[in-house]
Image (cartoon, rainbow, N blue to C red; front, side, top):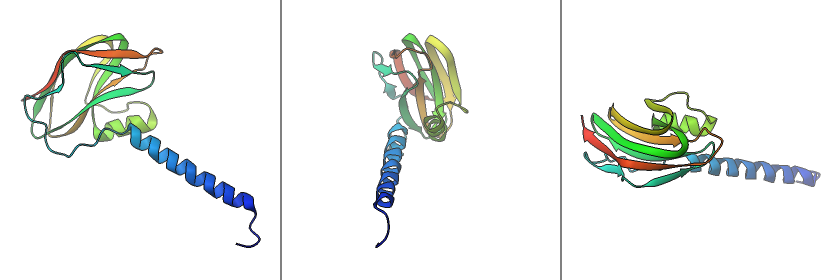
Amino acid sequence: MEGTPSWVYLVAVGVVLVIVLAAFIFASVLPAPHDGSPTPDGTAVGPAGHSYDVFVGQSSIISFTLNGSTTLSGAFTTTYGITAYVLTNQEYASYAHYGNVSAYDWTSGQVTSGSISETLPTGSWNLAFIDVTSQATSVLLTSPVTLTPA
């Protein structure tokens, strides 16, 4: 366009780059996609001895899909403390976007070790380990995270 200052083009390119970068960042913090097929009953979705590194203000998740009422169980320990949550995909996406958990189906509270035995309905779920401390921490599964028909 004749007469349009060159700085307008630079601003337009900058806006497009910011939008693409924001979309990439948002997509990278969403739960890992799964094909929607149910996780088989009795499956260990997190093996004992597996370790997750969780950095300050970040999370590590175990995602799974249930077809019917199922009990999620397992145990963990941490180096500096963690808060574990059971979240739907929508609840996790809200946390990823806003940086705080406003809704959840179960929480351990801030602990250095904990266990879970929670019955969940059909749906897609995430066991999220969220670091709200001022130090990065490591989460070690001391027993497998398993799914058992309720």
